[in-house]
Image (cartoon, rainbow, N blue to C red; front, side):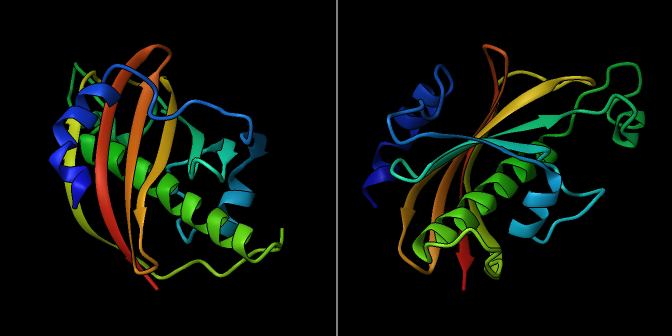
Length: 178
């Protein structure tokens, strides 16, 4: 696959700039948890995307928001006296936004605003996950997802988390969906 010959270059670039930038086809949206719950099967306390703020079907990209609750019980053990939001939950957040993107793309193909069935989705590979800066209690994060390849059976997606101008994490992952 040609992308992965350039994977390291892609990751270096995504560590310094937004994964995607709004273009002429970008739509500003305000989708909250009720709308997200119609897109993906995740529920509280494991629904990690708080809102979707922009979608671009031409670029196959999505932007969302995640607010890190300072009272999240994960901080009592990760790490006492130096709380840091776990990287595995950051990867999960990016994956959930990627699943939202897949569902919105499916909805676009059917030309409907009705809820569409959530694809059966299974993560099959994380090609890379890079953690550049800690995510801390109280942070409001921008989460981005970008489809890199979609062959109708598997989806390769990039995800990125930033806090203001600081890039915190990025990943490239592959999922199977039916």
